[in-house]
Image (cartoon, rainbow, N blue to C red):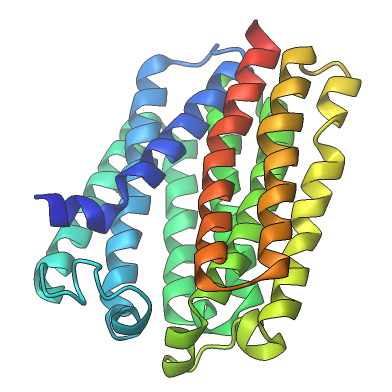
Length: 276
């Protein structure tokens, strides 16, 4: 069972569920709670299914980049993983239909975009990074819609997009050895590690520059500002500077983990800044 859990990346799914719930609360929590529950379930199952399909498609590349993953390590066979992915996808659409027409439409769009990513855009580098970041951040818009105010999700979705976009590039730098074998054209392969890392700094620097604005415009209180300045901006600057000095896989992995953790920190800051 633990191998199948690793296939679906449970921590990422928890962050996804938390993001939708966060946006629902920020929007006023006026929407139907059953629709929220089915919406979160559908989104989580859909993304989980594509994590599984991604591992099936990447099994040769992962022999280089992540040999301990369930499929390249032989713990789970590609056939059994494909069955799991199919069941998860069916469950996603069932839950989405119970959540409502908008949720079902969003999940259908995500499925088309993620299928295009797996089939083509994964190998193109920057376009694939942009697509994955857009899908991930749009979960906050879905949550805000379910909560009764789509506008409440715009700022969280923008910040999530910048975080995801920077992290996708950082992950590609770490994955360059296997990506070369897979004939992919990530920024790291096209530009080199250091230039790609510098490029990843653009969305991350923009995130840092924009992060005080919700406080300045009165969207969130001073707790938001304090948590973001220390838990996101300062920590990001330290981890990124460490990578610039030595962009090896250890430091790139650290930066990637910091960026994932900052998604949780940023959500905590918004909750505190809105309700405490």
